[in-house]
Image (cartoon, rainbow, N blue to C red):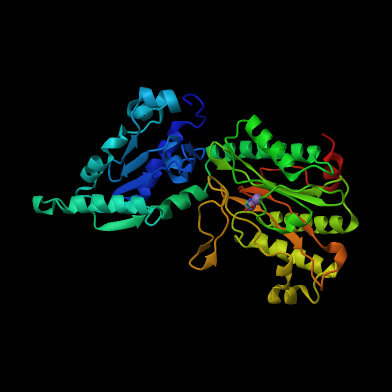
Length: 439
Ligand code: GLY
Ligand code: MN
Ligand code: MN
């Protein structure tokens, strides 16, 4: 625990300074996530809050960061004290003193001192900056601090008059990945690519979906990823048409496709990859038609990604390619414009083509500004994930029934285009057919 922190603490210090600069004045209050019980005496594996981690790199529960902005901004970390008894049962705790030094925070104090210290720090401050409504317990606690400051008004103390949502500044900061974030995300993407390759190699007719899930989790963990970034979707045959399928408990049949949407989380950062391949290693003609169409639509989307392009450009490019394909294959009738206007394509493609990616799988950051899709900028990280899901229906040729395909990669916007950080995951028909079942 003590020596596995890979990011230089000065990176987090620079983010705190930037937040203080954006706040201009007042006090920011950023608590980490609580521990949560899964069943009696047994917690879910702990995952810190993304905002808190972004600003501190501090991995323990019961941490709270306060930033006092102004001419000389300062940060104060409140964390658990050292405790020989608890450390015997649960492991190492930094304690305020060592945490302050290791994480390069101006000041640190015991979490037990938080309520008293916060009331002092908020006195005569113009504003507080936190995430209102994110957690009812924190809303109540912070209002309690405000009331305690107000109670001192006859002594001349002035209470903060403004409450700002700190997420507005932080989301914009998180949307633009710095060099250290891009490096971590490339490493996460490489691990996830290996996991997809392993899953392809391990797949055979008669395998259970959960056996393939196990191969993914094994590869994530083997390379040091702490978690899956979300629970893997391992969906054979018709299950691929259930967008958030998670049971992963059916048998894989020869002749079916297998859709795997899986990515690891490494040092807090998500990767998000989907691949679809034939269980028996060879696409049928219909499966191949749909697969090649989705792949072409993904390339069309990726082609649009560059600084200045609209967030919506990849989606529109993917959509046009898909719709033309649906018409060519007899799945939709009429012109491309008409099928898009009537949304007839939604029978087969009902989600958008991507999302921001970072500490959260669906990461922080607005998609529209003043009602308009925002423009892409270098440092933004997004997924590109078109798909096609054909459920049985009277007006759909039966040979296409239960084909579900999605292809998903992660793109970092660069100065003149984009870098596909998940590029090591095979996706051409030829590469896939050469790999499946060869483990
Ligand atoms: N795996 C979650 C997503 O693709 O959005
Ligand atoms: Mn995704
Ligand atoms: Mn995904």
